Length: 517
Image (cartoon, rainbow, N blue to C red):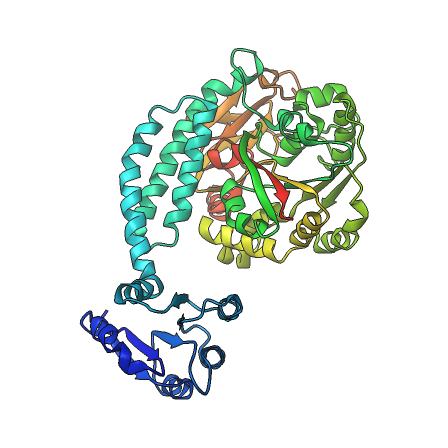
C-alpha cells in the first residue's frame, strides 16, 4: 500500500489539494501534473501504478493524452475524470480501454473506491470469495450426505463447478484444494447413487431424467418448426465447466433462453452416447432395429459413421417433416468449408453440426507432450478450450447463425475426467480397449472400483455373446493391465478419459439460445 504511486493530471490541480491530502493520509504517493504534455514526460521518466486524467484541459485534451499514455504503457490503468456527460466522450474513453470513468465533481471516497477497484481488486475479490466459500463449505458437505435424486445431483454438480470457477483465480490455493477434496467426495457418493439407481431408469421403477436417447425428443424436437431455422451444435466431449468458460463469448451473439443438464448414458463414450442422441434409442435397440448401422466394440470399422441415418429415422418416427442437414467437423479445413457456405443453409428448419475438436484435444493430451504441458490442470484445459473456441470456425458459424436469425442449441454427448488412479483388470484378447469401461466375457477386476453390468440387457446395452458383461470405472480410476503395469500407469495417469461413471462425464449441458437482434 505504501508504494502505490498515483499521477493526477488536471489543469486546476491546486483546487484538488483536499483530495490529494486525503489520499496521502492513506499512504498513496501522489504526483501532480497540470497538462497532458507534463503528464507524458512524467510517465516517460517515472513508474506509476495509476493515472487520474482530466478530460477538459488546454493544449492536449484528456483523450489525446490518453492515446499517448497508452502508446507508452498500454497496461497502465487510466481513470478519466470529466465535467461532460456527452456520450461520444464516454465512448471514446471506453474504446481507449480506460480503467474507470468519473463525473465531476468527485468526492474523495469516489477516488478511493476507484483506486481499490483497479489496484486492490484481486486481494479484495480473493478475500470475499474465500469467505463466501468457507460459509458454503459446510452446506455443501451437509447436502452431499442427503443428495438422493438425479435432479439434486445436477444441482450439486452445478454448485461445485460454480465454486471451482470462482476459486481458480484467487490467491488461496488451500481453498482450491479443499474444493478438490469435496469434488472427490461428491464423485464417490455419485458413483454409489448411479450404482443403485441407474438400472432403475430402464425397468419403470423410477421416472428417469432426460438421458442421451431421450434428449432429442424432450429438448430439441419441441423447438423445431417449419420455417424457423434452428442450429443444433453437438461438441463432442464438452464438460459443463468448459461450456461455462466460453459461454461469455457466445453471449456476444446470443441470449441464453435456458440452461438444462441431462445425463449421458453408460458407457459415456461417443459410439454409445452420440448414436443414442441421434437415433433416440438405447444401444440394444439400435442393434435390433438398425443392424446395418450399429457396430459393437469388437466389430471392425468406424462406430459413428451413420449418425445422419439414425437422425433421419428418428425424425420420421417423431413425424417431423423438416428440411435439414447434418455436418460432422473433424478438421480445420472442414470447419472453414462449412463456415464459408453456411449462408446456403439459411432456409433449413434444422442444421446439425457435430464438432470433434474438443475430443481430439482431450485425446491429444495422452499422446503429445506439448498438450500435456498446455492442459496440465482442469483450469488450463478450460483455458485452452476457450482459446480454441474464440478463434474457431465454429465461432464464425455461430455468429453467422445469429445474423441469419437461427435459434441455437449447444450440447454434447459426454464429458471427460482427469484420471489419476489405476485399477487392475484382466481380460481376453477380445476385451474392449477403453480405459474407463470394458466389455468382454472373461473379465477379472476389483469389484469396489467398478460399476458392474453382468447382464448388459438390464441397462439396454448389447450382449455381444452369452457370457459378456460391462464394467465401468468409478470416479477418477482407469483400467490397467498387469502386463507392463508401471509403464502403462505412468503413460495414462493425469490424462483425460471418458466412458465411466463420474459427474464430469455423465452430467452434461444442453443450452438453448436466441439471437441478439
